[in-house]
Length: 222
Image (cartoon, rainbow, N blue to C red; front, side, top):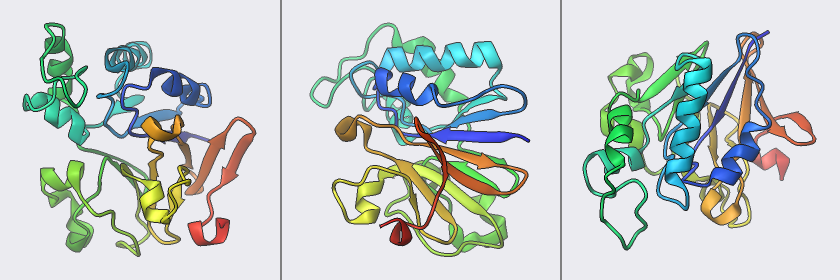
């Protein structure tokens, strides 16, 4: 049996990232997909170094890092990697990370699951791979409801508290149809949710310190 783990929107929170990684099992054929937005927090370089270390150890086909809109901002010179919202001075160390970011894919698919930072153009149906680059990383607002066939979409970008309409909710949000959103707003919550997909049986689990639990639609969990 193989599992695909995913997490998103780390935003320089190295301690929370390390905690989330402690719940990931990369043995055998298991994989980890990181959905973007690794930077613009207290330790952006530390998070990037950790990802690079993991890719060096396991390979970039086993630890897959996707492009997020914050990486795009760094690449476009709008917001340097380690800078906060009031400091736009680039660091001389940024170049090696920017070179790595240039090659980040915008989505990853395994089985019937699409992993992406923000979303896809769902109006395209089975032709969704024609999605504009902007939508992959910056789609807003988050879309819910039924997509094409049995395809499921795992995305970050939008804090799940906004989908839940509850500022205290920072967990995985499943709409009961085709969408799993996993941005737990770590800069506020201190938590990075981890989702695990059973690729053989097409089942989705929330990974916690207490165990793995099937993810129910938000309305049922509440």
